[in-house]
Amino acid sequence: MPNHAKDQVKDKLKRKIDDYSEVMKNERASGNFFKSFIAKPENIHLDIQDKNEKIVLVLRQHLITQVRDAIGLLAIIFLLPALLKFSGFLDVLPANFLGAFNIFWMVLSIGMVFKSFLIWFFNVYIITDERVIDVDFASMIYRNVSSAKIENIEDVTARTTGPLAAVFDYGTILIQTAGEKTQFEFDHVPQPAKVTKLINELLIEEEAEKLEGRTS
Image 1 (cartoon, rainbow, N blue to C red):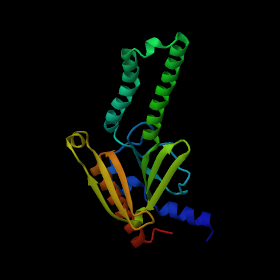
Image 2: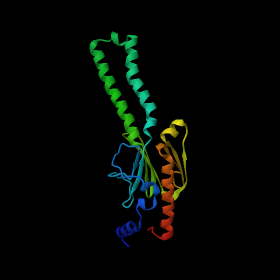
Image 3: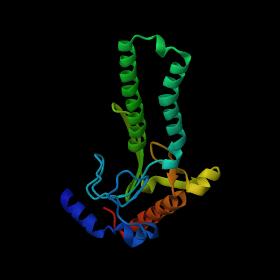
Image 4: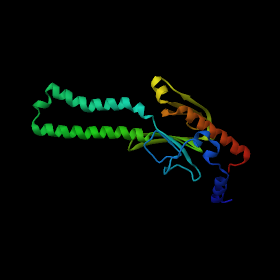
């Protein structure tokens, strides 16, 4: 049978996520790319995504976990010039040097804020109906993508540490696999219990597909 015919047969036999996932039944599709918990995302496609593969959930670190880094960044941006001013260092600079310093510091500050946002935005954890995917983004020139088939997952646990995590409902998902990468960590993601339940539902469905002959 030609490959395209096999794909058509598999697509017909494959159930939609809402047919077997209690978690996804209660979630609305979202087109908001700036959330930390994006269920059934619309208009998102991956370069490594297979034709019949559907993205179920996109996760980022909970926004509350970025507050400490944001405070530290703002402290650097505003406190350093204030300290230089208080020390009298800026007062001895010629006017043209002072203007150049202000422009340099403004550009540098914007760059630091933008870099911090990009690292949060592009470091994502993706769950499809076939795989779990970990995208590590360090810079515009370096990105590492790791993935594991659902069928290779051996154990999933959620770890919540500290009162802040309990109040804002975020934690770390630990996924043990039999694949090339043996452990995945989804750090500080929202609703860890719900994410763990979803992965277990995908595991059950994967086994059902094998038993019922719905795999190609």
